Image 1 (cartoon, rainbow over the protein chains, first blue to last red):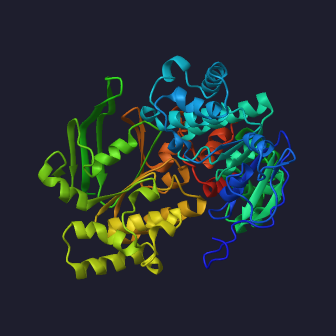
Image 2: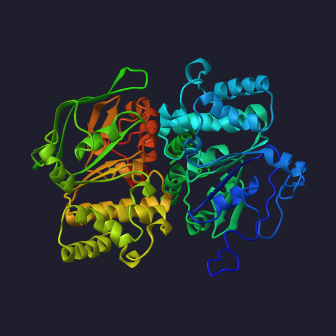
Image 3: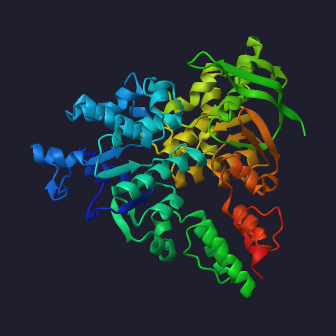
Length: 273
Length: 277
């Protein structure tokens, strides 16, 4: 909508470099530009000005090199189950690889591997229609479809949205397993501060279309609470509790991110006083 | 307190894709009292949405009974009366907007009830005011944020002068700010207008504000009580695959370390008072 009365700047002054093997969390209020930013990472959106490169290749040029670079980036949208369309789970997961021109034998191997990875038994689920699965199962089929592309970079937009605690643990367990085993680079957009604190080794906070903070999650949660609140996001509930305890005079370490570490810190502080 | 909804020996089952019957609700017995704020929690698939849909006759029991304000939901003559008294707000803000202008969406319910046009206009004004959306009366709903859309959906129920609001994970698709908006709107309605609220959620910070919490698992009610009673049962809730407020979990762990913390602590503030000298 550029050059019309409806023109809006969605994101600006974005300068970031995501390194191989990083696990980046992106948080920000609704309308902060996170989804817009994400969609630039695999060429769904082209920048109005500026450049997006993957492994040094500008992905917005024409030609096979740019195509190849774009394919290295796998994207899982929010509510990925909404993008299922094939008649069987197998065919839905196979769609991506088949479109890449991969032979059926290799496609079959990738589908098996992907289904195994997301915890859907091949024999039980391969020939079922995706639309009669539970929501959580459908989500796993959709993620399987992206994994079957074997991307070097995995981008996920709110992968735990709408899931209960068990479902959330499963999905994040799978993402962490993949991260640890394959060295894939992960970029995760989430509202769930606890998940980001637990998994990401780098945190980017977006606010009004710009990057407000960029650094280690622990440092940001520890030192930048005011900025986080200004950006419309909050620290994890555990960090909030630890901050309150500290402010009330208990000598606790408020930078801890797990319950076990927090309990230890509180117990030590209580016994000392 | 007066009983508003009574569910007696209620079962609901349906046939799955493979031809086998699934028992979604297994012998449910519960009462919702007029003016109560009841939260229902449980893992995905436990039957909470199925139960919610029985409360305004979207679903009819396979056996047993659901009485809403004395009306039996299995009697087709009662359906419109039941749905006027109990309104529902669902999870997806986009799936429940039907009009292209906010005020028309809010007016949709009363129009269908045959309310007089002048009366509809008054109700729409009042409903939008109560949810804090009067400035958006002439806006397009699709341009609103998720939280705003859900508030419009709530206004739509208020315009029907329902005395009970059933919300099925109304904040699941919203960001923290949107969640806060919806929860405070509902709390305010409950306090100021004495509306009976049945609130299904996964977010513990929402369930703790309820008068009573019902926990479901595999189609059954497995726990029931005040938030302090329920959330202090940390082990049990974790076994059921549920979250616990961080303060409750911390209190539980501290007790495991032989630190004396009262059993009914579930909020940050209570824990701070208990722990800090």
